[in-house]
Structures are given as structure tokens and as C-alpha cells.
Length: 331
Image (cartoon, rainbow, N blue to C red; front, side):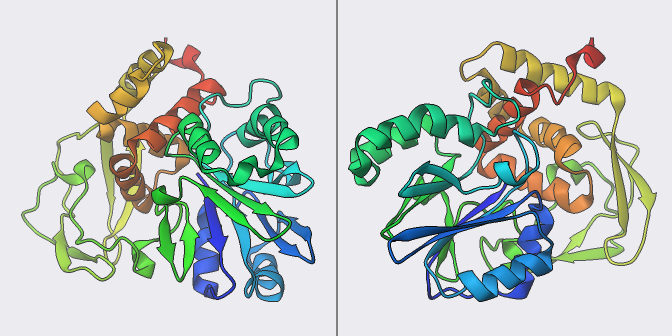
């Protein structure tokens, strides 16, 4: 999933924000900035403390592009950390999943493939194309609105593709709200309402409450019903506040969801995207199984699917295209 940031010199992120982003995107950190007509590249697989040190000492008061990675294609290593070299004067980073994946070299990311076969040949021949609005629109149409690119030129100029699909936070541009705790930091605040996953539960007593950041406090259902909703079953291991939730997929329901998604994917075209639109709860269920199964992840994925079904379809596409899901288990 990842988080891509276009960071201006007047932005100063808190330690809390840096840690929050790392916790959801810990498969590599990278940044690029221009200095004296040259690009300075930073890549690390380091700890939150390492990243904080880099940010404070090198990035905090600079115009720069920052990228936190969560693996979708390619190995977890420095080579696959963003940013990537496009030309001697241009480096870029990417958030999203490109639909064609990484067919030439499975060890390389989808971003590497797009640079190697699309961007580099174009910009080597015509370096100023990057700043041409028609070219930017062409790239946007090619990658789709759920993908975002950020470029840094050695003269300090930056270009963001699909900027309108991101959000502003502390003067910086961030590529999404699902890869970090946006509402916790006051972005995209909305009154909390129980997710579709929980709407079938009994609510005859409300032992816990949930406070949406900046929103109202609302009662949250905590009593388990015998109903199975969208294939999920909750094991009652109540703790403090909302209680401790252990969420596990029912095998039969999970098989049905995987088969339905796979059938849509194999038919090509927009069929998978249409399936996500028609059954967002099932798409979220499938994604949570692969990208996390705790309470917060369920809610985050539910929000992601409803807010950006194209991104959800891309994530599911990746599971089938790189064979993360072995369909022989679902025969």
C-alpha cells in the first residue's frame, strides 16, 4: 500500500506521525532532495529511530519526496526501496499497484518495470516532457487515479501525478489516508459508525464505546450474535475499552469470496473493478485476510474499499497476478 509524501521545506512532522506511518509501512524508507544542482538519494531498511534521525538531520527543513514502503511486488530490500532513478536528473517514487505488475523480473517492483519500459525511454529522448501538462495527463490516464507518482528534478522542481487523489497534511501532500492513521491526526474526520462487518451483531447492551478522533462518542456493539456476517466470526475475548477481538475467516465463506474474485479477475477488462463495486464488503474481507486481520485493519480496509474501489481492485489483482493466492487450494 505505501505512503508517498511531497514534503515542502516549511513542514515539520512530529515523532508520533513518523512512527505511525512506519508501523503500517515498514518494508523500506526512502527520500530524495536536490542540492547544488544534484540529487541526494536516501534509502534505508532501518528502524523508526533510524528514520527519525534521517528526517531531523536531513529532511525536515527541505523540499523533498519521501516514501514509506509496504511490499506488493518484488523483494523486501534496498533495491526495491523508493525512490527510483529515471534519468541522471530525475528520480521518482510511487504509491499504488500498477495493473501490469512485474512480469519481466519478479524480483523487481512494478514501479521499476514502468520506469524501465515507459518513463526512461520517453524522458531520455525529451527531458522536458516531465513538465509538459499533456504528458502528465497521459501518464495519469495510463496508470489510473489510484496510482500516484512524485518526481524530483536535480534543479529542485517536483511533479506529482494524480495529485488531486491525495490529501494535504501540515502543508505537505500525502498520497492517501489509508496507510496511516489519518483521522487520529485530524485528516478526513468523520463521525464513527459501525462497519458493515458488525451491523448484524446484537446491540442489547453496549459495554464499550468508540470515540472517533474529533467526532462524537457513539455506542459500539460488543455482544456476539450467532449470525455470521460476510463470512466473519468473532471470538469473544473481551478486554478493556472495545475488548480484544480475534477475527478469523470461515473457511467455506472465504473460499467462495476468493473464487468470486478470481473468476472476475480471469475474465479481464473491468470485471474485477465491477466486482469490488458490487460487493465492497467481500473485497475488504479478502484484503484483510492478506494485509492484516486485527480490528483496526478491518475498519481501515473497509474504509479503503469504499473510498477507493479502484485501489482495492488493484490490490486484489496483485494477489492473483503474483500468485500470492494459490488457487489450487480452492478447487
